[in-house]
Image: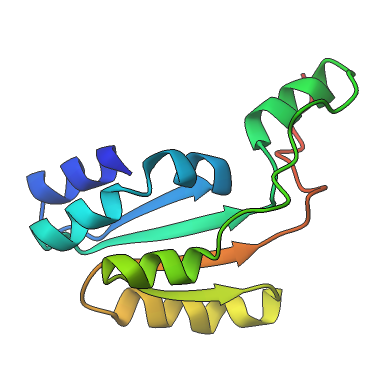
Amino acid sequence: MPAAIGVKIAAPEKQTIVVCGDSAFQMTNNELSTMVEQGCDVKIVLLNNRTLGMVCELQRIAKRHKFAVALPDTPDFGKLADAFGVKSRRISQDADMADAIAEMLAYDGPYLLECVVSEAENSKVNM
C-alpha cells in the first residue's frame, strides 16, 4: 500500500489499484490514514483467505505440512476502513465481482474492496 500511495502522488491522474492479501493488508492498514489525509484516490483489492498466503504457498511447494499460517480471527476490514473514513465493500461470490469493481472504480476517493476467497486458493504455480 505504501508504494501505491507513492505512485498516486507521483501520477495523480492515473488510476491506481493495489492488490494485497489479508496478512499484507494487516501489516500496512495504517496507510489508510495516509490515503485519506493526502487525498489519494487509491483502490485496494483485498484477497481475504484468512491465511498467511506466501508462507502457506512456500510450505505447499516444499511439500511441507501447513504450520502457523491460519488467520481465523482477522478483523472486520470494512469496519476498519470505515474507522479511517475509507469506503468499502465485501463480496464473497464471483457473481458480485463485476458490480463491485464498477462501484469501486466509480467512487472518488480511497476504496477497499474485500474479496473473501477460499483458504484453499493459491497461485497454482508449479515449481
